[in-house]
Image (cartoon, rainbow, N blue to C red; front, top):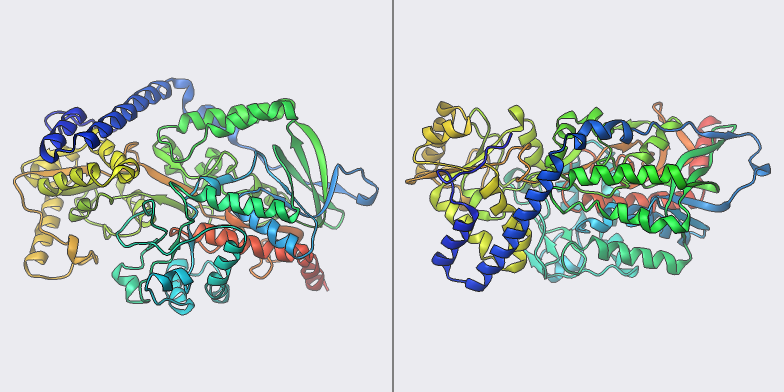
Length: 622
């Protein structure tokens, strides 16, 4: 249970605004802040009231979400069967990876049909749209000398052994060219650079350090450079990225069937995947189907229960009204259906701690990220890997003043550099006892954090200020005049915390580097008349843990063909994006999921157009 902040620990949120107005004097911005904060508080109160009903718990949805893959339909004489549609390459899931696959296959000369359970876009359209690339003209224009060698040296540490070195090398060597490919298909980029630490750059900035490039252990390996390329636009610009690719695909002649869910694969007697069976929503029911889809908005907090309800209703609608169709794919089927963040049963099997705390998560994806594509691959013998690998992000900064503090666990001990990438922070916190962690800082730094949250500009306030203030006010913030008293209020081991602070202060006094590598800018003594503890625990719904899954179907790294446990390729079946094991499946930094989706999508599209998984299987069999 989240401890609530009270008057003895923290002034109420109305008092916070009064203090800010008296101290900083900007009445217009403070009024806007008050209005936004009141609306946010009202929305939270309503949501919590709704979610407090017993029927809304996880158990209600668990059975409903668990969709065991249907066995494939085996046709011994496919040429004599009646098909509702036929194509060379069938792309299942028309998001970022699917659009790239469709474009690549079409440009390779294939007839291409894409199919999507909803209207298309998937997780990509909701995302920031960041792609990780090095040696680009935008880096050069911004004054950064970067190349594929430095990028490879850096990513080798981030990516690890999840792919062969030559596959990672190919991604790095081709990244600048792939960015140009995206631009040719309408995705806009720019060189305006943001240099501060952030999970996502503010509007007007389109190039930034999107990973751990400046963290000492990484900087010692490769020269730091901003490689996160954001499409030009406002807000989260994944929609800009997807819209450009969808428009390009349509212009090339890619056909799209919407509101149609693939329910099983179709194979011939040899096990070659030759098509799919679908559940197609009739036209008159599609508006209702899309409305249910639209209830899942990943960047809107406190909507976990709403999302589960909407998902259950969408499945009920599909079961009630859908019409069965069969589509033949002469060359291959590409699974690009996303991960499984919105399948609590699957998430619970691989990451039970996060599944049990799903109400505290902001699952980054769409309703279609339900693991269905992975299950389809498994139904014909496809192997999976790293299914427990997830992106679980927890932000300390912005506001940057919070980095002046230390992140400690129940034992009062630090366990990670506070400046680490958000995905590293979230997983590190989850590994602590009870997933519990607190940022301990001085009253001076806390007041500076409030100032930064309120007065960094309207867009900064909207995206970073409100979440930070919300956690300060409602997440269980504690205040005390001594570390011993603060530890008691937080349930932290007092001796451990006092030892941690004493060691920190000694390092600073001796002008020694931080043992965990935090920069000198935020390596400061914790000495003041009062101290604060900010609750960063995973179960804290006001601290916002962003999550999506990274594991998926194993694929041949040359073709993208789905493989079995013994490494043999399943003829006619490919996977891309988060339905497949990929470059970011060991661990994620911003830009690598979109980048991998583009890389693996193009690979699958190119080889499916040529029917290469079929040829490869025949060579292996021979």
